[in-house]
Length: 397
Ligand code: ADP
Image (cartoon, rainbow, N blue to C red; front, side, top):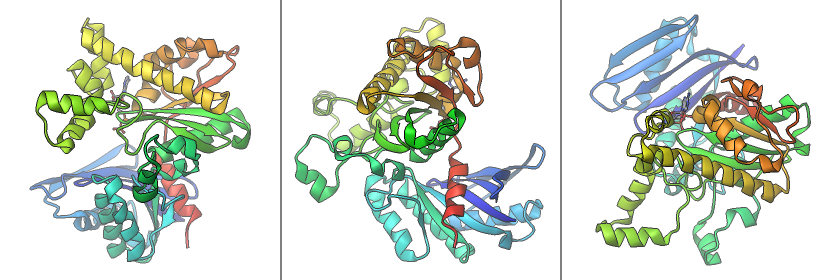
């Protein structure tokens, strides 16, 4: 029985899930936060709702991995380190280099991940650090990097090129890469299984609506267009990200506000915009919905803009694929907000979709459209960690 650990490393955090594979059973999951700060927190959930918590200083990711493995052993979740035969790491940017998940056998492999940091400065560096940390402590196990962008490498040129001078793509690889690919891939696969049809025959629009949000057109199992752009700043209105805007607004507002550094302005677009910037209340959809209910106008408008952008992308992707068989909702907002799913579908019934309010009143995997609906609509909780563990199995030595 082999165990595989799925890792999501941030600059000061490390999230994990431990699976028995190929059974796909989760036996532990948790989080180490505040790595490198005076006191770090370790949380491990396992067994029958058992929760372990520890506070202690953790210098770096290597020490975090050591402590994690020691604790997994001390709690009896594993008997010894040898039981873990594979590790899968979530990596945000794979650029044009990684068209699929890839084994991280050598330092050169990891270096390639780090070299892509110019496309995702906040992500690829800590992710490479996480890969190295595991490599050092468990050098002989299969190590696999799973990229958020890989699923979208099937997009045609017309979807990934921006209408700017072509040499910017040729020389600098400035193009749309998309993100959340692991999630879109997982829910599209599940959708095909639920429909009982080969994915190759289906046109699916997957709506990953979380704090970060993106929509993908999946034609025949392949991503043919996606709303996030060169970075995860593009596309939909998100928790604190602006999504698509006219680029000239940037210069105009920089002049008006006296913000001179483009990086500072991009920071505003990433962290102070979206639901947060519009509502002035919060980046969290629940807070925005509650404020709107209490009559807060800006929160109401923020909510309406969120729904509007989701509807417009769905409509675009119906055009991109010249049809659609299924629409899938997933991630924090998509999986949990009955109202968001209702409001999105209610405004696009022209296409022949119809929500069934009773079926829609769920948070688990379910068909939520009516029997008369020409487009099947599903709620499908995402599971990126499972997809990562599956890729480790697939690429095992
Ligand atoms: P992340 O991108 O950080 O992984 P999540 O997928 O966890 O984000 O989604 C977080 C978002 O989901 C937040 O905006 C949160 O308000 C929203 N959310 C969670 N539960 C609900 C709910 N019941 N109704 C509306 N929004 C919800």
